[in-house]
Image (cartoon, rainbow, N blue to C red; front, side, top):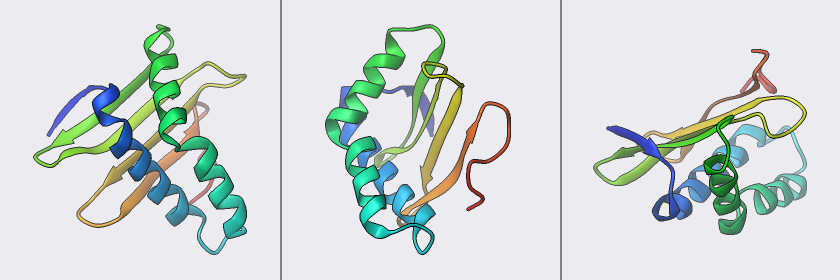
Length: 113
């Protein structure tokens, strides 16, 4: 497995992995309509591409992908573009994407999955 900066060729896989992870993370906890609304907002192709672009234009952000034999298998995004730094990461392991963690930089998980 290699780790490299995210780019245009990984956008579709990042969107797929992120959407699947979000659905799995909030299943049974949050109204499915709200989850799908968040997925559409955060993991559309345009939203992921914008996120990669935003991270590439600043030194205070990173958007990396893990690449295996089958292409992109996970991602990590760290940024301090908003009021608080955030870390987002997800890794696909064999089947559907599994949420690994999502937490503010302060170290407390936003949701225990």
